[in-house]
Image 1 (spheres, rainbow, N blue to C red):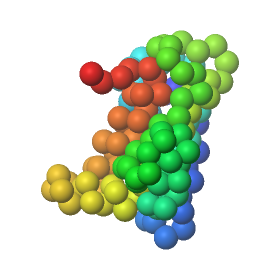
Image 2 (image 1 turned 90 degrees about the vertical axis):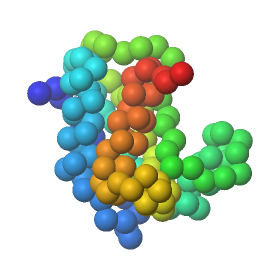
Image 3 (image 1 turned 135 degrees about the vertical axis):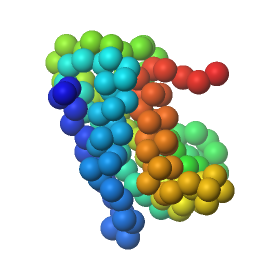
Image 4 (image 1 turned 180 degrees about the vertical axis):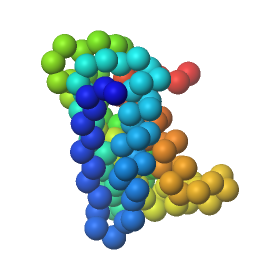
Length: 128
């Protein structure tokens, strides 16, 4: 088991399965063979906060389901030396609920999917 530190911040009104988020991150780290201690933060916010972040960092005046902020932009990561701060994953819970309904998925499953997607970005693995 890797030394993975996951910090989770949740706006109080949202019910989140923290243990499951941590497990999803651990599984993704293992699957991508990242070794060494890593740290990731996950924030669960509302649409207003997400829209604010989207405007500030993406220049878009809209909410979105996920944003990820890498601390090590661009390079692919496999074997960090000391504790590596990968970055932050921010989910808009109202958007996650909408996406889950649209895709006929459980909310927890959609959270897992998005957290994994965001983490792959932080690991420098981008989709085409």
